Length: 230
Image (tube, rainbow, N blue to C red; front, top):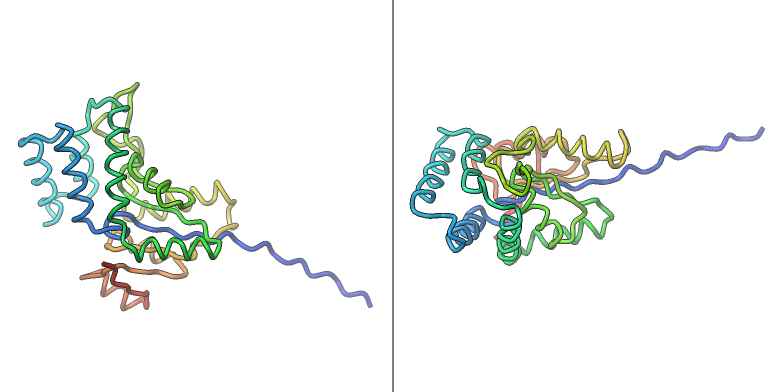
C-alpha cells in the first residue's frame, strides 16, 4: 500500500521584542542624554526644565499616569520644525548608542545569529527608536509616533502610546500584517518594568532586566529568567 506523503507545516517566524528605556540602557543615562541635548539646543530653559521635573516626580510617585506624563512632556516639542526635531534626534541617538549596555548588544547579536526577527518595542518616540534600531542593526521597531502637521511637530501623539498592554497589541498587529496570522511566534521578550509584564507574558522566553518590586515578584512567580545588566 502506498503511504501518503506527510506535509510539514512551515516554520513560524521567531520574533524577539526588546524594550528600550531601562533595558537597552539605564533610565538615568537616557535622561541625562535627553536633558543635556535639550538644554544645549536652547529648548529647555529653567521654566521648561522645572515642568519636566515636576512631571517626572509626579509620574514616579503615582500622581500622574504614564501616558499622561508622556503627553505633557511633549509640550517642549510643540511648534518645533520637523527638520530640527530630526537633527536633535540624531544627536540624542548618537549619545544613546554610546551607553547601550554591552549585555544588550551581545543578546541582540545572539538573537540575530539564531535567525530571530529582532524588534525594539518602546513607548518612546519613533524619532528616537527608529534611529536606535538602525544603529543597532535590528530588524525594525514599534514606538509611539509624534503628531506632525505640515513641517511642524505638535505636542501630541499621532496614535496610541506603545506602553503597557499596547506593546502586545501593536506587536501582534504588526506581525500579522508582515508575516501573516499564525505565521509567527513571540520567541523572546525583554523588559525592565511592570509596563512590560503583558508583553513578557506572551513570550515563550521572558527575560526581565534588573527587576525590582512587582516585576521581580512576577518573574519569580512565573519562572521568568532574571538578568542583571550593568
